[in-house]
Length: 175
Image 1 (cartoon, one colour):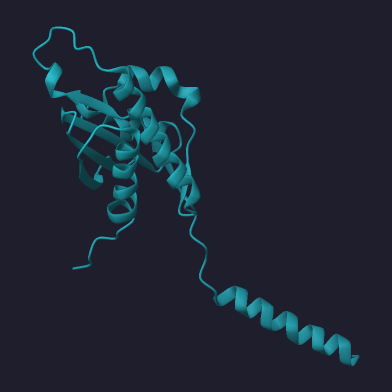
Image 2: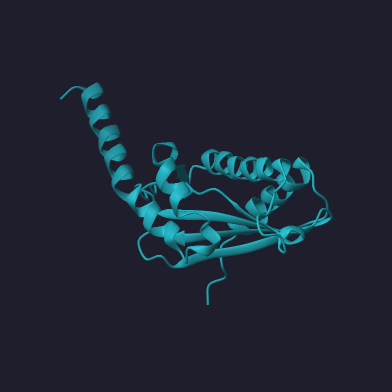
């Protein structure tokens, strides 16, 4: 055996041993982000609430921002719900379907179902809530909220980014 062959053999052996004992890379968790819901307290007494177009657009804006944040994180893989639009629309509002988003997420190939809810008390006081459910069990795995003081695109985005950074990715303490 030549010297080069011996060196290559040793290097290959070290490489194979390293691969065998290294921890496996966890697969990204497939995540379905469903449309967010809105309850405008100022509209509650009306027979047919007329939600403001700007607020409805902000719901889409923050849901999309959450999808972008998830997609940038290698721990998550965002499931495209576009092919399932009709089913998603038929099941909404998700704040009133008692966890049905988990069944849909499972059906669409996701491991995690994420929904959001905006409780608009006034134009100056808004509560943004985010929920995550395990698609297999339907169990709620994360529940969080943030208060927003104002009604602008930037403030709503600040709220969803705050939840992402300070609540969604924070692991629960081990007991």
